[in-house]
Amino acid sequence: MASDDRVTAPAIILVASNLAPAALAFPPEAELGRFVRAGGMTYEIADEQMSQNHATVRWERGSWTIHDLDSRNGSYVNGERIHGEVKRRGDAVVRIGQSIFLLVVDGRGHPAVTAGDPVVGPELGRAYDRIRSHARSRGQLLLQGGAGIGKQLAAREFHAASGRSGPFHVVHCGTIHGVADRLVFGGKKGIAETIGHLQMARGGTLYLADLPALDQTAQASLVKLLTARSTETNLVCAGAELQLAVAEGRLREDLHQQLAAVEVTLPPLRMRRVDLVRLIELEAGAATLHPRLVESCVLRPWPGHVRELRTAIRHAASRAIAEDRDLIRPEDLLETAGLPPGSSSVETSVERKTGGHQVDLGPAALAEAMQRANGSLSVAARALSVHRTQLAKLLDEAGLPYEGLTHDD
Image 1 (cartoon, rainbow, N blue to C red):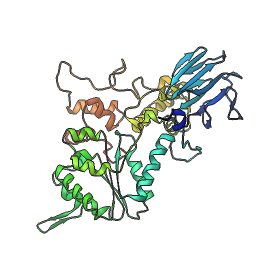
Image 2: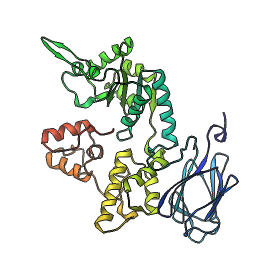
Image 3: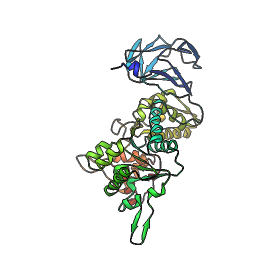
């Protein structure tokens, strides 16, 4: 088997420096300081908190070696101050002075980032390359990834790359009940004729979000459609943990097999650290970010992906604004932001009954959950241990407002 050095392209990426965004990529052996020396080049870094010769980084035998050169303010690796030399496998986060470097095992495709560019780092870039390739050769795609990861954006990329001139039409399967087959595919009952979502998307792309929530009869019709391939419309289906959905009987196995021939799994946000930093900077707007805030965000897993990150940064920014500050500090970030439920001593989810009793799903508890989640359906659903489509239905029944399921999933 080939070594990591041959099948990947390790890189050192400067993503923030002196309270400002940065975008520089270096080869995997560098001298870091106010002058970065790497690959025969020298780059000046305007960070007075760095020592002239602060630290060295190199990649060898499948791991990173970081060596602090007795710097004045110290070197931090994955949030911890180091002394002398340490080794780390996998990706790592290095903070020196007021600068953040990401050490990525595979930096292939790392783009030059300029103002106005989409937030796409190397990991998502490789997934998008596959999506565009499928769009040019196939009329269908299966996207897999958790809620908030950006599946709808990926589906739009597929639509754009396909060259179809028709519309991009979105259907959230969990919101279709009763006559799902006729609503999706159209049909006639008596003298009444229904124009289905497939007809609405003719000549373009039909995007079916949360596929396992689709009615079983409609799933059977979808199998027939894929077998016949008689449509002039692209079909993009999306969902999370699809193998589990098959095992639980929520997704037909033959449908999954048909779709899985052209499947792309989107990388979770915790694996897209360049994207993560860019999204933080985007949400912060004109405010500046303390480097320890960026470091803290990059080290969190963000199970709610992009949507959860955006909500957390907006909340942190609002705290800074309330205190008339331009600088968003680490303490502005909620202690539980970006962490799985129950992983922190600070309680942010709704109060739950213990001893095997059911979670309270009454109107008061639902309203409290949505308030604590800053209006995010996905975050509140995780706190209540229900699927977000079920939560949407409960909110409708309780007459409580919410943004709905039409935003990017």
